[in-house]
Length: 222
Image (cartoon, rainbow, N blue to C red; front, side, top):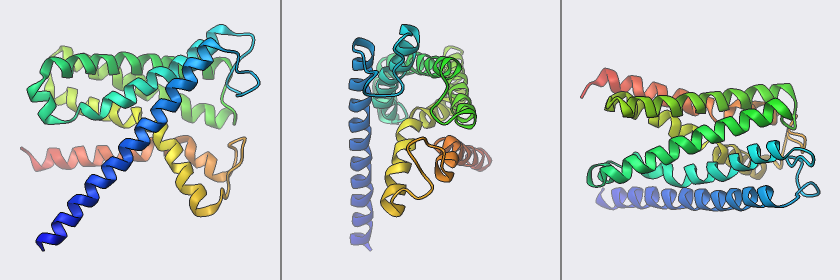
């Protein structure tokens, strides 16, 4: 039994390590791509670059840069040991994440309003709702922190955590799906059946799972 517990613990640590590597790898890619998009003409490289609109490029590529920053920082915020031993660091990092999330949300919403997503209205709606949720959660997280309402701050911060990780989850879904099905119901224009589910599947199910857990925790009491 003792060996079994150790194996489960080791598997958990291995899973966390793999996930951390995914986070770092994706964040590094997003950061590098965003910086290139701000400073270079990528019109021959990616459809998201707009040749005749500096504002649109700033909106989408700052979205990528600050999304990477938030994604690297946010996993450390829920760790109780860090919060207790380094409260000032927790507050500073938290504010960086909140500001980054607000810019990420506004940048994404601005891009959708001006250019739209590659797949059209359905994807526009799914991604705009994602951006609106991130904006709302970031504001609520900061508002309750400033009011020193720790319980509500923690709840909204967890919601923001899920949304910040959404970009990575979106891509992980595709990695898993293509590994299992070789891209069934998916295409480059992101209009296939699987793609359409993905418009909301990278964040809504995870938020729902979080809400269920939060309510069960509340009923269980301290």
